[in-house]
Length: 207
Image (cartoon, rainbow, N blue to C red; front, side, top):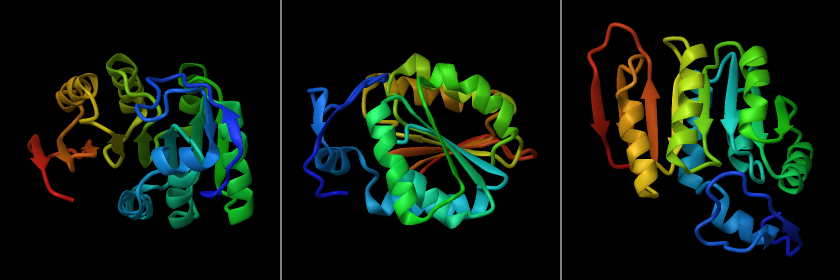
């Protein structure tokens, strides 16, 4: 997959890629620039194993690498993953099949269109991973909608929180949400917790 030299037409419903300016992209380039780095994939895997049940919600499937990290480490959880680009989503589904991972439900379309279904089907998720859109207003909207259906055990992970001024502003606002008890900033990602009975604090750690 990583060495795949096919070119596909990518529909970017979010902010788009800072490195790939054209909509015609090689699959290998998507894997190189958009796929989650290994150490963060391991983090997602560990978080899914610890917090994933009963289900995981992912905003932004891309080629499905982050999806597989989470699904493979939490077999008893259903992973609902959303992708806006049909061609990319098709490749991801083939990757899931080749990997033999069967606890993934892949949905194609805009996040705004798919969220009502997710909110109905997912119930209260154990883990949420927000990626695939790097604009302030949508990220805050997605977080708020997930917060509404989250329990005290839910963990929300937001990718690329320092990738732009908009994402910095979104991260600052999200940390102030009334349900948030503490956050962890590991620079690339931000982790949000809703644990009851804890004093609000924002941690910054090196990962």
